[in-house]
Length: 277
Image (cartoon, rainbow, N blue to C red; front, side):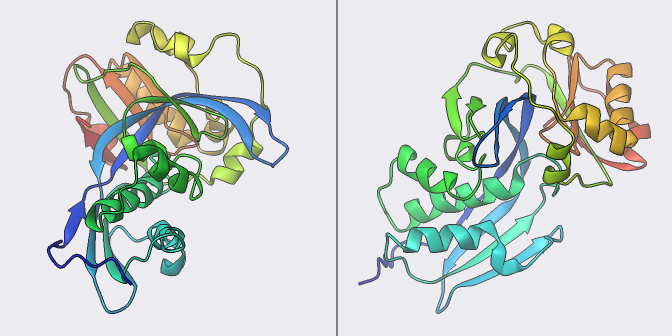
């Protein structure tokens, strides 16, 4: 018997992006992945995800073009994963894509995790956060973060999360997205794992203006060599007065943390710029 509550209306959620504050690649794992350490911080750049009960399972999208086969979308994979354990009816999933793709912002992971949250609520599955995180982790290393969607220290493959106190609400965050996409696999090929002297759990407690020296992203050196425009963006953010600037994840987006609101029209000419995120 399908779970089918006729009183449940169409539902829409707004999956948000994240940035990585620092990223240390510590060692290569036997399973081919890497042990890393990073801090995930949510950003207010959002997609829109709507789910409607339907006669058959369907996925459509609008907004930014999503590369690849639509049938491989993580939202559909999440549906099939949940349907192994719960009898949920067919749904029409519509995703309006606004979070830049290939930018290190976790947009696809957010969509999948918000889909799990939405299905859990819509069909009253009764899953707790830990259960939803377990499903999300099967879809991608950073997916579980978006279930609770709070600042977290991520270790292991990025799927082991520890709550951490980071509040940037009094700062002005600018995100710059150049017209290039960085392949995660290519980015990993350019790094050499190394143990860290100080954990990000400790470094993040430093004043933001000290992060510039203390907190790094191990992907930057090799990615900057391949895509000099990304290095140039980081440099321009610092020249404009950023307290801290860093590439997010494996790129290609770069964020800057400022004390006050400002505009940088010269960066808007060749890049997508998000202000106050």
